[in-house]
Length: 167
Image (cartoon, rainbow, N blue to C red):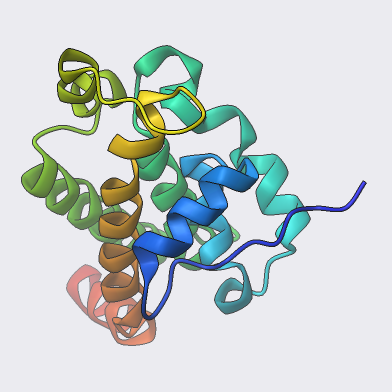
């Protein structure tokens, strides 16, 4: 079985890439995680498997798959290998809070069923018969932009500031 081509949600034409990926079968959480695979030095197949159960709000309309995928990316990038590394944990906590706050401020929620409610009420159904197909595209584009900004921050400088604050 050949894996459908994945187009990372980076650079130009993110919306078109998200639509193509959705049509190929990639879920929101997978699109976010896989978009940063190369930068994180992660195996695409591993991220596809990791993100699979989190689409459609974990299949229950709970936390948005874009948010879960974003938190996975931040964890892979900023989480320490040791739970004892308090400085790195503080950096991750700050990054995850910034991501969650920015996403919620832009979209009003991090809950899938709340984010997609307008699509359900309006009967917005795209090709393939899913209201998720249309309503999630903007969320994926937004999450990818937010993550790029957070990943661009210098984590080494963040950790040094945290260590100094603990001293």
